[in-house]
Image (tube, rainbow, N blue to C red; front, side):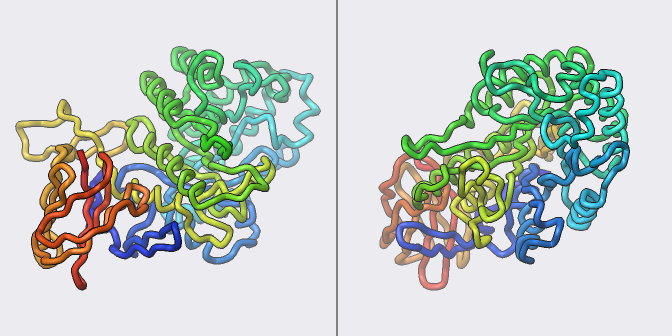
Length: 468
């Protein structure tokens, strides 16, 4: 059930580090626990080094503590699972499945039909359509069948659309040898092998618009065709490998455009998942604290799509630490939410604060006014418990009967004679500090949502406020 996490769950210590800051959260709060309270999945890959025991112990501790969905970086791809014809290798995949089960995590399978990381032996049949169809079907039957009932969702087809213009990727061995019908067939075969698994089409650059000349626009037309023809597709995965251009303080790729895709897919009863998120900077440049804070804001904006769109449920990052990231191969750096030393970055704080303070919109039409229970059931597997969405915040009782409420730009406090007041934006950055001597203090901040902390001696209270 989706529940609102109360502000009392936020730890009350904020330490300033130069011009930056770090927020210490309550010991029992993790990205995972907050995601589960909000009815979504948040995850990260298991880096390939993990499978060989090549990572420090705190990597796994962070991974299983902070995330509730997992996917292998490379270990379930075609070359890893069928390195030679009809000889299958499941050892690494089985290791991940066991790990996920032990830690109560959802499992993604990646990927069944892709133009890359295909073993050389497959190319022997690129001029034999019948044989190549047989090869793909046999691979899907065996791999999906092996993990039937264990892998919850599969990237059935990966990156089949060209970058240069909206059309199918012509140099894929599957497209060259079979034609575009390999895509329809792959979905049909995967569904037959495991009827309960969710089946996704996965690709990148889908955050760059849904117009007909964009990749997402082309894909949307294909999804309409698949749905109309009864092809068993349930979701679209947006890889969302986003780059910061740095020079103009702008990220290539738009959360608004990806949200538009989510809404178009909702009309077709298809889910949107963010499946491979990273937000990198060009290699070789100095990345400042303000750059990292802007990065955190962009991570949060993509998270908003998953929290707010009813057909979106997964927010999965393509890595844990900057030290073990594929981005170097793209001439990018520092694209993840933990640094080289597995310490959380501003992006981590940004995600955490957003998860803490998300309030699902009220659906008055779905409320049963004849009963006392006003919980709204969301058929997309998220619980959307109705919340009070009025602008005025309630006077929340705190330690020692301390309460606060806001009217306009004025904060009123009862239960403290001389309170220290600190206000933070929704990324945790300090924007105001002052004293409340006579029960009220004017907050010199712009309109918006903020976290406010009041302190007097050992007593503290933290609450979200709306300045209007």
